[in-house]
Length: 112
Image (cartoon, rainbow, N blue to C red; front, side, top):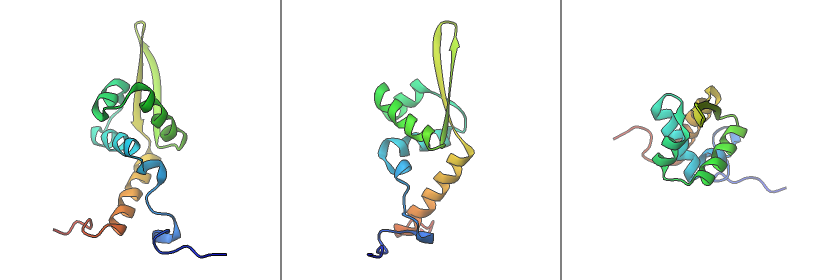
């Protein structure tokens, strides 16, 4: 059996840069949600990351399935509202993602 090269595994022998987070749209989604620090309306998130409704829905589904976000749906009058927020597990995994990124990209250690 072939051994994994150093470029294929990160700290602790796990693969670096979670593929669930590393996708461009999902990285933007999580970054925006973490910056906002609160639940965000679907439309605000869609507009912020310049995604279509369908594309955003697919990425939110993947993040929700992985337990990184929670999605709540309600009605205000007759209008549906969808709010998205990062879960505690999502915060932990994003922090680990950033640490992995720092470990493989020179110059991201906070040194100027």
